[in-house]
Picture (cartoon, rainbow, N blue to C red):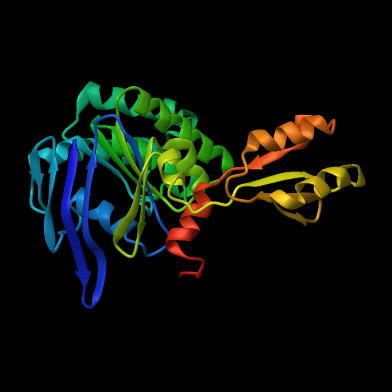
Length: 305
């Protein structure tokens, strides 16, 4: 559906995007996960036509997308990182303006506005000035505005920044519903839990490149991972820790023992041992690799402003 080939963007000596190539299939919920300054918003704004790349080609449904006017852009919707609404106007007035910009009018526009307000649980505040809305309500109204023309592809640039948990969940459920109905979504975020919940495929972006791309399971296979088994820190487990000494390292944590098997020691052997010693399986937890661990492995732990 959407193809990016060698997209590059520079600001003076700073390279914001460094030859990014990517293909988004119709119906995907694609996550663009990266730290602050990684290039997420730059990439989204280039796809949306708000900025022009210094190099590279973007096509949507086989048609080129350029910074100049393109009929293919009618298939795009954008939820910007910063709320783009008229604060002194009410919800309906805002949506009417955006709908008219999309070429909607009359009964169809009124119908789309009402559908959107109902879906985002804003119908009872339709005549209130937007400046009186909470941050979460403004974010939800911005999403309604981006969908009035029924785009095929929705770009969401960190749409939950500063949003309360209830509004965040409402946004998630709404986007998931639209995706099930066929809407393709590209969703940029630096929240691990958002990417994990929402996205069928994730690209980790850092320093203008995408060093990792795939489903969550595919990404986790890229993480150098030392398997660990946890069990309670109690004297009753002393016989087990003694038997495990030759099969890996056993360390005491605050509340648990941490057993890291040596290479080649299978989990089946561990559970055979615990069963022979009379320990129920519910006492043991195998730690899995996480998206957060992979993210930090690829992007580092240094704070970024």
